[in-house]
Image 1 (cartoon, rainbow, N blue to C red):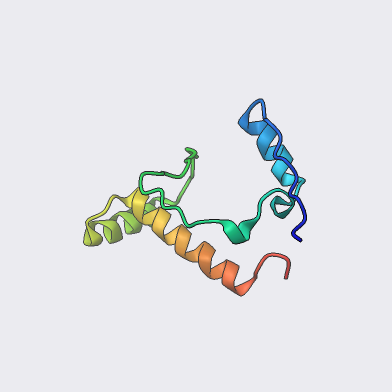
Image 2 (cartoon, helix red, strand yellow; image 1 turned 90 degrees about the vertical axis):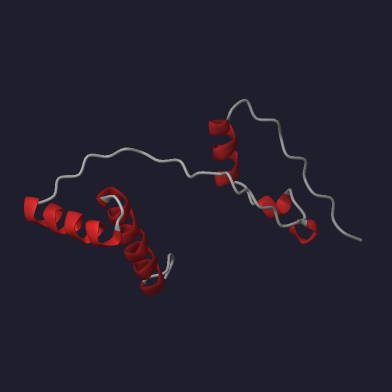
Length: 96
């Protein structure tokens, strides 16, 4: 017989829910074996604006590379950062 799962509490706001899940294991509340794959095609990740100081020469080179690819230089910078983060995480996994 399968153990009963705990009931997920009602949350006042998203911050309260985040705090709850940061300190609780979802496996105690959800039977993931019964889960179904969901696709959310219109979801966009949250973004935060930052100020970044770059040497003018580096910015010029970034703009040149972006022009060659016909993309905005900010988009190319995000691509470069994403690729490097992925590479670093493969080389140095969390908890390793």
